[in-house]
Length: 282
Image (cartoon, rainbow, N blue to C red; front, side, top):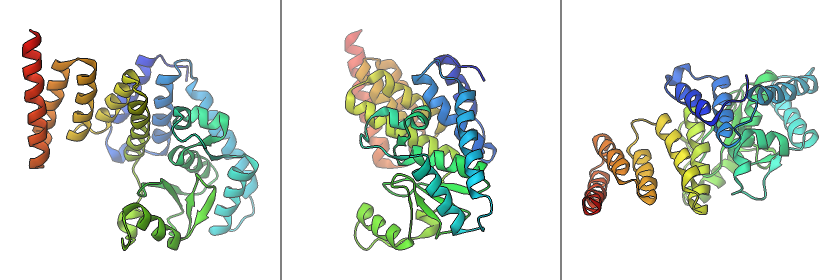
């Protein structure tokens, strides 16, 4: 697949986002992550990124040959990716390069979710069923449906359920009970892509890069068309840019979708304030 332009990358992403969750598989997750990078790197060769994952998968398969099923295979994959290949957690957490799959593959470092994505992609090619877990505060991976096969790709190791419980208490407060069906459930491809974009959204909001921030908001809206929060967040970026009519349109759409009374009231106040401001400009 040739390098897309920024526009065609967005069009491909919109097509992917429009599909039903049931139709989004592992390859679609990889494509979505590559398309996120392609807007930042317009000359990016999508096929080259897939080839890099394929090559890692081939080498992983060679290392795993003869390993028994279960925990031993997971540990061998850990040694391959985090030892031989040198993938590691990034020291500069807010460097946007750590959120782009092509950069993670080239630099061998990333944030939890992008390292998890590499892990999942390589595991799949090596015959291990690995799934992402949207764990509070820190994205994790579960291998082969086993709760004892939970991998922290950022720190390059398998972790126990007891450690998961301790991390949950740290993230949500002491006494929080670990409920596997809630805290260790599989994340969908859509949820993973939203979380990747949300990380970039925070980075660009912090740096004041409104153009890139808006691009993140646009793609989150594509993925979560019924989410009033995503529409509100984009409206706030439009407001920052002085695009009040666009902000009002998003707030109106958010109001139509808001089921929480408090949120609806806040959205209406902001809309009315922007209407008044737009009226003064005219």
